[in-house]
Image 1: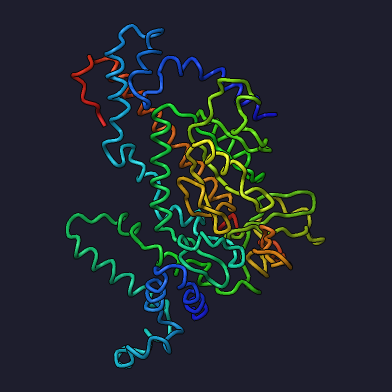
Image 2: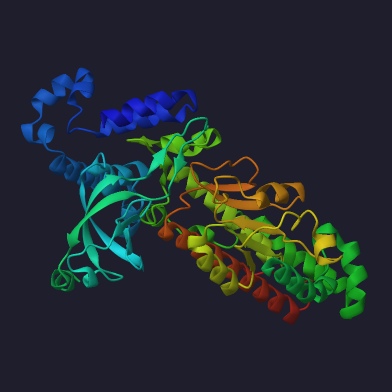
Length: 192
Length: 273
């Protein structure tokens, strides 16, 4: 997350909204950025149990539940559970999304779904902005049909490059991934 | 070309309607002049038409469009994902939440507000019987856009855009062609990362535009820009569904208002909302 804060700080020349957001994001982190926030909160952190400092999973759930409880107490009788779930802010939705939790895309394993096939090219969507295109492997080639779930090793989320003399990057509108293999169809049936 | 057929079709279909209803926005004088040919009650019909036309303008969200979408829906459709930092357009920086490992993230709070105003504007145009043209040059989503336009009774143009389609219309398609009253761009770019010609031409012809602008687009000429992802099928299907529901809702409301005003005598009516 330090990378996010550094890049966001670099954007400060454009708009004044970003510093506020950066501070919000930094404050909501407790897993690895204890060095940045420790200056103001050193005393409180030593008093808290070790579980809160080390692991973000329990701490995140704890904070989420206390927030919900506080909101319920404040709003009183007119509480609809659906609305409290929908009132999650964009920042918290983003932070808890798998794309953010994943980190850099290089060499990450993901599951994708084939949504289009043209002869030997498989167009696989794995939940990011772009799909990736992989060649049909020689092993079990006929099993790769539309709707099959496959395992991928990601290389890049978007293939872009700045060419000489260009103002902006040229993008291929595709992600880059290496196809590892099929997920057995029996597992998919039992899951669904 | 398909475009020629489209505009010719609309020219032939819409003209009787123009004669009957008239452009009430330009004042009651024109409406009375054209209404002489078709409607028997002249002054009553213009007063009723004016009332129908102006009633939605009194409430900020007359068509209750805020219930059509939520932040979670936009998030699940991956509307917040932008291009890489190197592809960013300078004018899109105010709409960005930040950048994560080189990928721009669009601020969905701003997108919600922009989408609400864009859908509201579309609904008002559809309520007043305006022609809406859906434009997208993304070949991947051409079919989705065309079927959306067909479902809500409006028009789409997802093929090659001839240079004089809007600016040279009277010469290319015959005089008296009615141009669209709103153009909705589901992607403001051509394939070669040039802006779609329609954005500039619509601005030249004083046609308001609604456009989904991604982080590599130029939002300056679009009247109602909606910062959002235009590359993922989920996001495009969400936009198409929202526009379709908005337009259908507005048209149904118009029919309902006309029925109500037609049945009860003018002057006594209180439009139900």
